[in-house]
Length: 415
Ligand code: AMP
Ligand code: GLY
Image 1 (cartoon, rainbow, N blue to C red):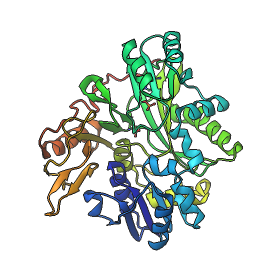
Image 2 (spheres, rainbow, N blue to C red; image 1 turned 60 degrees about the vertical axis):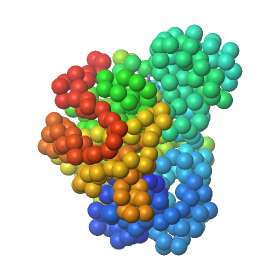
Image 3 (tube, rainbow, N blue to C red; image 1 turned 90 degrees about the vertical axis):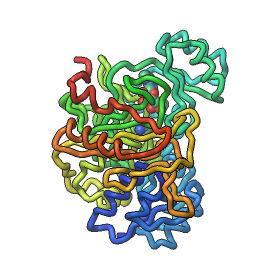
């Protein structure tokens, strides 16, 4: 099978590694990719949010399967255009990707499906926003309605800051604060059958102890030693299957990766958000542990035969990823700094590029994700930080507490 992978981040580097290791994948082409991916796949130029250009590339590359990594191409209709050429595509249609593309739409689908989530109000004026803030009280949660690369959400006790975020956005969703540890659950689906991957935990805030602004994600680990028994079954039956049913009933079946972001509250699991693609950096740890060949799994979802797929097999042990970010991230990341040590195995590239002389430079906010593995979380964590220690990048910063609370038994879902 020839696979065309779309995207350029750490998530795509992890997808590329798993696809390249699948004996059923004979050729792996990535557009646009990055220097890390270039070591294991053929790189092609393409404007990946242009559906016509991506479909043309899929035809030219004689792809049997296109795997779309990021949300922007999905929301733009890349999967629709690829499928219109008769080529299998892992990723939802533009209509179904609105589960991520519009938080208001996602809330409306959750309500129709009876999915447990935070109570929310959609606001378009400062007066509406002010009323909603006072209805829910602090901590305030204000979400830009559109795509914002993981940075459109402000959670704060400061009412003025909450209101000013609302005023900066055309439309916001203001909602009840959900208290409890967060879990990212990825579900591969063909629209009807659905296969959950291992749950992971992401670290959204930029600083240690969850301080500072939200980012795209500063680190992750899997598995979750503290996850309550029955969590996955409960999420599949209360969240995933009802959502897939509503999407089918509306004639917009969701096929691809449904990312369920959850908070485990005292009242039970509540959906924080849906995404229409693999999470970054959680994918780096989840796929490090997946033994089942990834290409075959994604192809089965793309062509509607997931119900006949063999049960997933997982490696023993644990994985931890620590993101090394550029100076200034997430507010204003500095790029163009020389980076050393990024060629080591386990270092997955996000924002890297090579200059004309082949020197590796930082080219984005999250630069690399150092992914460690080991027989348990503690050893996976030390492996990850050992890789971090070998990265040389002026002004770089990273969190020093990824997976630490879980190892020390300090993460406890409410009883
Ligand atoms: P989202 O883009 O919706 O995932 O939000 C980004 C992050 O903001 C989440 O991962 C949470 O850490 C936080 N967040 C979002 N919604 C809520 C909520 N209702 N209560 C508490 N935290 C939230
Ligand atoms: N790590 C969070 C996300 O991918 O949205």
